[in-house]
Length: 185
Image 1: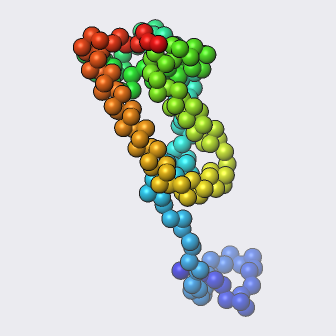
Image 2: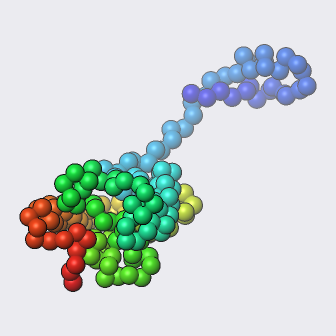
Image 3: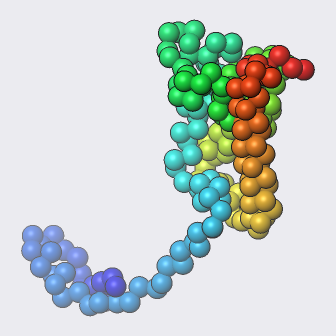
């Protein structure tokens, strides 16, 4: 509910002007149409301001040393699983893969993590989207919402493929059948 002044009321330089607001008549405001949130996280995320944090992630990928990672600067291994078992988790090598891709070392990027070829361009694409004006991002989210089912299938396929690859790689490295980073192809 909002308030409106009586039509016959004139604004003056009266110091008691705020007392005149007590004579305001309640008026019903028109209902505001709120956007219906999508059930797919990416569509809601594109319109939010939190997406701009991806700029820092992209800068980190660019600055990261491509071979030894942060270990080159004396920072211990951030992956607890890799630190204690010596085998990589599903995400190990992703940042170094991106650092190698940015520098044009495509073969070495593949050896660190083959999914870097997919996720790093997606990361930089999302960074570009995050820098667009909010109205443009809302329009993009609206267009993507029409393809929500396809996006969900692609997303779930990518997640499951990523996890299966990571588990198989973990087991092969533990068994001594594969080196990390890989020496293939």
